[in-house]
Each structure stands twice: as C-alpha cells, then as structure tokens.
Length: 213
Image 1 (tube, rainbow, N blue to C red):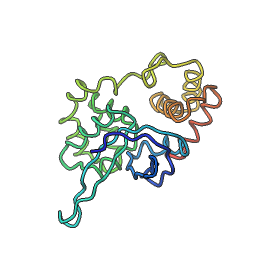
Image 2: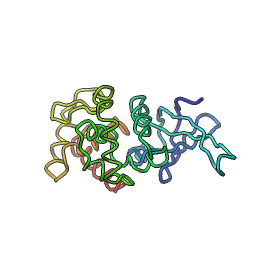
Image 3: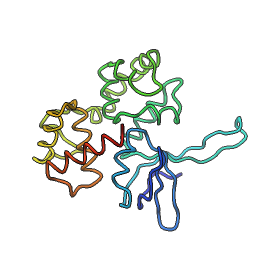
Image 4: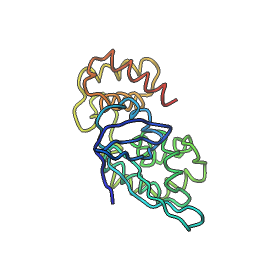
C-alpha cells in the first residue's frame, strides 16, 4: 500500500493532482479545500500523505486503486473519521471538504452544525449526525487540528512571524474572517516559504482565495 508520495507536482486538474515520482506519474485525488493551495505549488516538489484504497465499480465487479492526498497524517486520520459517518463516502467527503480541515474540525468540536451545513452536499440532517457522531472524538483526538486562530496562534506548528501576522491583520481589515485569513496565509506559506513580506503574502492570499472561489 502507498502511504506517502514525494515528487514534482506536474498539474492540478479540478480535484486531481499529478505527482511525478521518478518515471512514474501518480494521479492523486484531493479534498476540495486543498486544490487552491496545491495549484500554487505546480512545478515544485511536494510531500503528500496518501490514503490508498480500492474503489468498487460496475456493481462490485471491478475494483480500481485510488489515491487521496493530504498535507499530513493528522488530516488523513481526520478524513477517515469524517467518512465513518453513515452516508459519507470518500468521493462525497472530497467534495464536501471545501473548507480547510481545521475549520471543519473546529466546527464539529464546537457543535456548530450551521457551519457544517455550508459544506457542499451536507444538509441539515447530515450536519447534525456529524456533530452527534464525531464531536467528542474530534475534541479528544484532534485538538491540534482545531487549534486557535488568535494573533499569537501557531501556523503549521511554528510561531507566526511578523510578516504573516501583519498579513492576517490586513486580510481581516479587508473583511475576511480571522479563521479564513489564518488559513489563507498558512496555505501561501506552505506552498512557497520564500514569501515572507506582508504585502506579498496578502497578494498571494487574495489570489488563492480567487482560485478557490
């Protein structure tokens, strides 16, 4: 089973990324919320944690291997927990997770069904079921993923540098929710760590937002 991939990101088409590892190109499906971040990294080396599974087709007569890519092991584990809810398969979850997983995890932990209802293909009943089934598990096992979003919060496990903090402040002043501002800046920094200036971070974050929307 394939558990991780390291290679050049060749392209991202809709929700599928092609990772070139030596002479082999792997098609990796992505959660909707990760597409914009990875598009910023086309042509660069990337590391993805992978969920490798067999997808049933033709009423179970054919099984095809599929890969789903994540930023890290924690997000892969959260995805597996999310798909444990009745009625949420892998394909549906990939479409539904249009928000950053940290935002979704936080909404579950806070019993915020309204935020979950804003996800594609997640109606009122499913949102309530997600909260009922997963809230305690997310609180216990994914506290780090649900981490705070204040000015002194951490992004990807490191203290927020001045440029990133200033960029978050500017995005909030432009009308972004602080949670979204933190996520946008986080994604920009992960895609291109050389971007450190606040103005450049804001510009890249706004471009990223446009690609997601």
